[in-house]
Length: 381
Ligand SMILES: *Cc1c(COP(=O)(O)O)cnc(C)c1O
Image 1 (cartoon, rainbow, N blue to C red):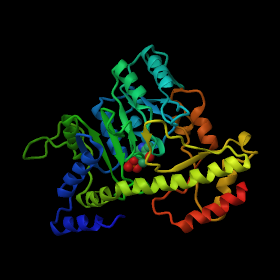
Image 2: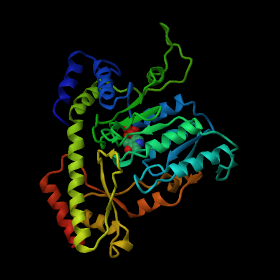
Image 3: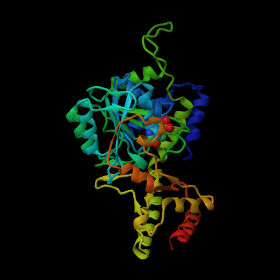
Image 4: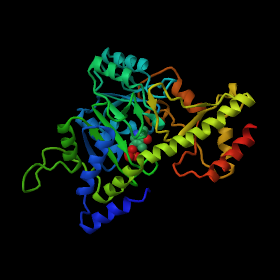
């Protein structure tokens, strides 16, 4: 926490705005728009809820096809199945680790020509995908120019999953402002948090109004409880939004802190690469992109690192009670999505096999870093 969160939460208590609406919600939405440059925002109970609403508002229904980055957290793909739709997974490219534009176009062409086959169900017939979900993983912006050009060419809306990239920019524009919709997350592990929460961003005011309507049980305009649509209880509470307002004040500082952690690791690994013959690779920052460096991740190819594996490093850290984690396991390799079509060339699997997320918290102390360095030195020197 940054320090001012409690002030906003207290205001909610004092004014008795303890509800899924109120001044903190309105102001948090304004803060999000002001920071990102998005025209409209709806504060919601989770990033997953935001993605679900974006799919509903993109008219995603039973047996529709939705293209999704395979290399991501499961929450990017799960809401597709809430609608009874079928995820079509697309691989990553090496430069940003995010959605590969070449594989994306292959996937779209296959959908349009009726080549998509579902395990045990067979061919689904020619269909235009209803949406494309690229993700800015670990804060790194995806290749948005290329992805948006393909989306435009085939006239398919983009839902940008910016859950991990709040504060990152692509060609001087904040992530979360490229798609027709974008989603943010304020879950406990993200760069800023409201304990749990999310937001849907769009430049289209009507769509955001519809999102707010669906998120509050879809009540028609009548004195009694009248419903013409299925609704959801997806709105953010005024208490939680108070935490969000305080967190927005420290977001630029958090980005600085995360980037400083990355710089520390980068200097360390550059040094062992240069002096000890290793080839440990950090997630590259493409020209024109600035990552919030939510997590610092490394790739360790045993063939280029004297047989060292990411697992050996992970276990060495674990022995000292320091947690590190493998990168996201791609969705096309998850048992729950084993039926889903996939377009790729093995990049995301390689990233999963070789990648490790290192401790990257905004509040890492010099002492924390030294403890990590001791283990890294033990393994590498
Ligand atoms: C965290 C996350 C989500 C989901 O956000 P919640 O607020 O936890 O529901 C979606 N996509 C990605 C890539 C995430 O990291």
